[in-house]
Amino acid sequence: MRNIGIDVKKVKAQPGDKNDPFTAPIAVRGQQLVGVVVSTKAQRSATILMERQVLVKKYQRFIKKRSRVHVHNPDSISAQDGDVVRVMATRPISKTKHYVIIEILKKAGEAASAETGEAALDVAGVKEAQTAQRRSTKKKVSKESPVEEKTESKEK
Image 1 (spheres, rainbow, N blue to C red):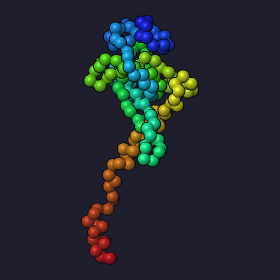
Image 2 (image 1 turned 180 degrees about the vertical axis):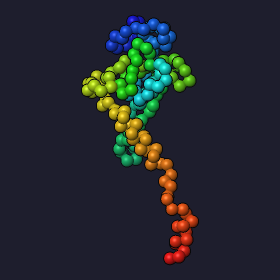
Image 3 (image 1 turned 45 degrees about the vertical axis):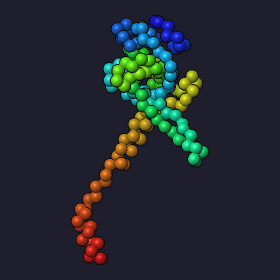
Image 4 (image 1 turned 90 degrees about the vertical axis):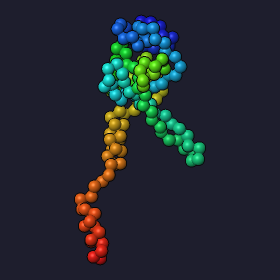
């Protein structure tokens, strides 16, 4: 395993991935982010969800903001949906991937770790909320036709 300059847990090196910071000469630098993996459908890729609080000056209140970031998921890490991970910035790996997962802080289903410093997001709850929001924004079609409603209002 190559030293990437950050104190992380040891991982089993799996050669063959040219974008793995532990085995290939790819530099990690800059931002370190913590988020929850919400999708691992693409090969060696993942989407993480990060939640943060932003102050609204006018109301002196905080609101929650969420961001999704596409990251590289090396074979040596192999993060799954629901894992809390630490990612670091790197050179552009593809059109949308500019981060690489360097450590799994908490596996899906385990108790929250003090190391993460954040409460783990409930991925299933997030997906259910997004689905409910999409359903509520769709147009609701009334069973009665608009023509029948107009004739009823004229008769009154």
